[in-house]
Length: 70
Image (cartoon, rainbow, N blue to C red):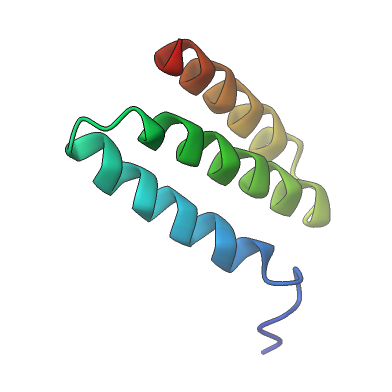
């Protein structure tokens, strides 16, 4: 098993997503921007895995988080 198969982007995405959920649970607006970064990382993982659904879904999630931030 190669832990750096996706250059660590998958791990970064997981950490950003967890941090964003924590921040949003504390009603912190920065949770939205953190989640946007996580969504972009997950979209990059989708590109690496050739998963169009993962890319499209995470770009849509990022757009919803932009709306939440605004």
